[in-house]
Length: 394
Image 1 (cartoon, rainbow, N blue to C red):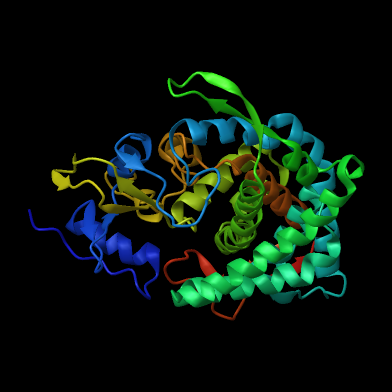
Image 2 (image 1 turned 90 degrees about the vertical axis):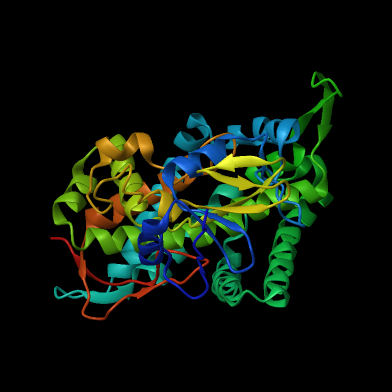
């Protein structure tokens, strides 16, 4: 069977894969990896944890770069940080952060409104303030984290290992700057999410898979978890804000539903808008054995890339991928992944996005700007810049 070639280099992921899927649900990248473009195929790979390993990086990635019992144990230990009670307790502080940011943005805006970038001026700033508050990190890190986000985005786009390694080392240094004082304080360290994580323990399994005691998280595991919770989330929230506000400027009735509707309805709207234009482009896997996928034989050791942006627009599942249908499309939505490695931070990310939109739309009307936006290029998705006009309500 002839496999089409798909080169993601320098392309806008959504439109590029809309065209590529016409040639089939699987493709090959120039370096020989499998690109999984179809919805059914993405689900099959993500759910088959035996045939497709998530341990694909040469760097430690906790938790979702782990497999088997090790992955399960860390998820059991860390998923409660995103539990319903935790999110409910954090929501008031999160609303204050969003309310204050919106107040800053519209403080000097006249009736005609002002143009700002939804990604950098709204999404990125809110993401940094929300995450540092949740983790208990110093607010003074805001400028450093915002600069790191810009540098990390450019390094990721470049594909240069030296640049990505440098920004990764800088972020690890930021993490160490908040861990070191807590280590010195010991039992007197502030009781926040970061300190609680440092004290968390994970279950150790015996060779037959039975629980065999507990151990503390190792330092490198704590750093990796915090890197995942922050480094990944900061850029993601900024990109999501761009996607959501770009869409809402053209959908006033949906914006009104977000403004006055329930939290559950707001979550459904956010998920559907992100499905239509999914900024979480891809995850990697490695075949642990020979396997057949969509009629193609994949050999042990071969690498696969699950292209979530493409899978979320597969016409075999979503007849009209751009049609806004939160209820009808919810059962098939893969924005946050699927299977054991589904995004652990989904509850927090969803809460952040809903609260940001609700507070923003309560205080301001958001309309399209005359300035044209700029789409992101692979390996990132969504928008790099989304100019919008904010006008105070009332």
